[in-house]
Length: 321
Image (tube, rainbow, N blue to C red; front, top):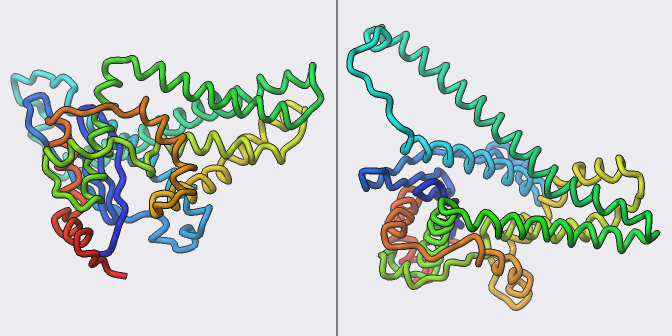
């Protein structure tokens, strides 16, 4: 077995894990049963090698992760929607299989369009709140100080403050608290496996709920790196300032991805120090899970990788080179 990095995301009463060839959604349903749905998946970078070069691969991976994350989040919510009562067969149930298939195809197409639309709106809102709003507000500082360094630094600090304030605020919501507990279960199960320990509830419970490759750390690194990147864009023209913030997002995302990728593969003083702020933020976005949540996370891992073989390779240091 080759050494691989799996990652995931907390969803509604469940965990999504993404492996090298597929991703798995495990959800604790209202009847207390755990349902696991595995979807085969080949990344865009694997299909087109030109998109796997450094920096660019970070942008591609970011977009793919957003898409899969949004899709699995919406899929998890379907388990908890109220089912409509049906007391008699409808005419649609008596139609031919071809007609049903055609309707299903249209439904899938509609769902995809809805997903893409939702993702686009979410991105626009996120860019507006976390990128454009700080730039807009900081630009007013030029009325009292003519110093690009100070204005850009103030913008970066304001961006970090808005992000941390947002995370701290939503962390108070009950539904989000449970999601953050599943987030902790996701990290703990990955940490347990990568430490060479069998994925049992007892072992996972002992593992850390913090992980260097976490999406929270990625977003924080994006905010942090943006401070330095925007230092090179010096203008007090409002529209040009705002356009530059949007235009440079792919560059910042690409650099941030390379940093997270490096930190996730190396254990040294440099990577540990640079990863520390992101791990601190995870104190807000992860909570200690209960045993039921850990069971769900383990099932999700099992959907994308043979953890028994992986653990043996860790113990014997026998991964393929």
